[in-house]
Length: 80
Image 1 (spheres, helix red, strand yellow):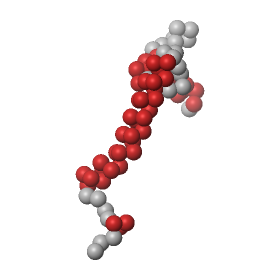
Image 2 (cartoon, one colour):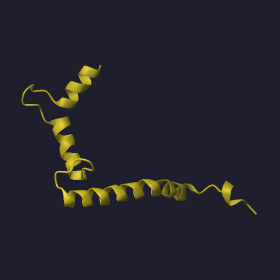
Image 3 (cartoon, rainbow, N blue to C red):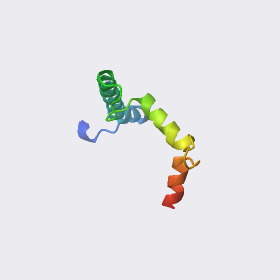
Image 4 (cartoon, rainbow, N blue to C red):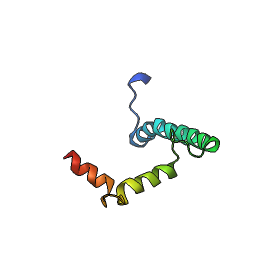
């Protein structure tokens, strides 16, 4: 009899078993974020996915009105 400890899952099952913890964390984050957002819409501790997308849009694609540069590009240039 083969020991369960040494069992290797097949390809598809292995991928699914690897995704389970990631999906569980995503579900917990979305639930906690939604609960905090319902209590306080201005909460910045656990932003909703929409708030994250809006922040990425502002930082990566919108030029700063004072400098005229996109912050992501300006920061990347300064880091090099």
